[in-house]
Picture 1 (cartoon, chains in turn orange, red):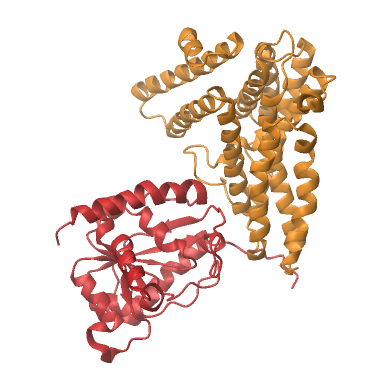
Picture 2 (picture 1 turned 90 degrees about the horizontal axis):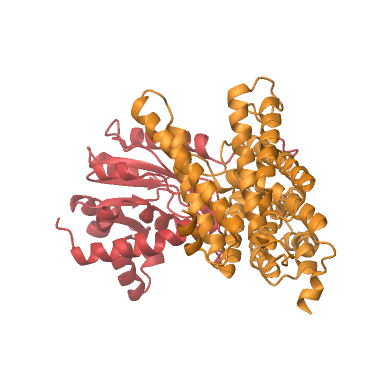
Amino acid sequence: MKDILSFLFPGQSQEVILMISVIITTLLIVSGVLIVMRKFFPEKNIKEIVSRTKSWWIMIAIFICAIFINNTISYICLGILSFFAFRELYSVLHFRQSDRNALLVALLAIPVQYSLAYFTWYGAYIIFIPVIMFLLLPPILVIKQDTHHITKSMAMLQWSLMLSVFGLSHLAFLLSLPDIDGFASGGRGLLLFLVFLTEANDIMQFVWGKSLGKHKILPNVSPNKTWEGFIGGAISTTVIGYFIGFLTPLTTPQVIFTSAMIAIFGFAGDVVLSAVKRDKGIKDMSDTIPGHGGIFDRVDSLSFTAPAFFHLVYFLAYPPFQPFELIF
Amino acid sequence: MEKPFFKSTCMKLVYKCICKPILKFFVGIQYPDCSFLKNEKQFILIANHNSHLDTLSLMTSLPGEMLWKVKPVAAEDYFGNTKLKAKFSNFFINTLLINRKSKKEDGPNYSINKILKAIDDGYSLILFPEGTRGEPEQMSKMKSGIARILSQRPGLKYVPVYMTGMGTSLPKGSGIVLPYNATLHFGQPTLPESDDSYAIMDQIEKDFAQMVEKYGIKEDDDDDD
């Protein structure tokens, strides 16, 4: 399989190719087990897991094509992911009719933010949404002169933009990080590490919670989340992170610390979005992905882990990285 | 009624290959599974009306095979005001134009008579009983014409459809589409329980009240005003 993958994605490092083959092998094993189970234990209800696994195949296929075929396509696809996530978020939050203009302007921030990442203009990229959009959007809301609940709209708009565009755009900026000597995988390796570990953390917390979970951690937010799931998941994630640390330029203690951070921030993202869904009285953000719910149900942890991971790696492995030297 | 091959293929192409992907991926309309409509020979889709997107999203959600024999009922004064517009909408949207101000004395041009004739010809219909696009996310009172039609054609099923978010995506008076996860909710094909138009109206209103209760946007109850 490695040879086929090396042929399909020339220019990718051996580590990345190895990782992709590990992912595909894992999925093949899971699918195999599910097919056998359906054949020999037809009375067991595994319908949801089957549709989830099917969706995983599609998501991983899209992800690999989007990230490893062409550099420009990677940025565009990540931008589209942000667009879907942002649209889903503001549709669920129910903005007022008079907020339409501000929402349209906020949508325009997506191409700008991803272009800044594409052209590696770090200084502008990092302030564009937290500073420029933060100052620009409230006046646009005010122009409509509808002050009823306007504070809520201001807060919700900036919050959704931060989460779905600023947060997720860190995935794109990982690709723009410069090469380091002796680290062949580059930004793609880091991206693969982050996405794989975040999703693995989601799955591990789910599995540990299902099998051992007794003590509820946040019963009023998410009744299915338990201490056992959280701790078991965090430990498994750290162990997995240790083994796939070859995708990053980090030293072993750094990899362990970073993986633990991904586990904690992933959990945080998950429960924050659960709380929002509970407030709005819905179970899933939408029904785009069969078995999973909406796009944001899948990337909720990612919108938290991406900035956390990016800035950790940026701090640990990229000093003294001065982005302006790259442009000028 | 024979299936016009050219028209049917054209409509399938336009709706399923062009309109639906745009509506689904760019606008973000969420389509439920509507294959159950394939089993129905003839029906009237009754939907709430908030936006120009309504007709388009209803048409794109229908099974492709039946598109050619579904006629959305539209206002003559709005969609038929120029010849070109009327021709175009007749080929691609298959509209049945009615005059909202017509009276019983107009004979075959009376809106109800026009609709009944289309039903007798074998067409299924899309009807917005509110009569016009109302305020976004609010249902206004339905007009009784639909009940009169159903009472005169017993055995004809109606399918209630409740749509949310269309008015936010493209409200009345706005020319820009805001991408929005608008949703269509299909009810079951239902036979009117009686042939009295008042009872039918009550039944339809009850159906919609249930759907609004189930899927409608709940306003915050902590308002301090």
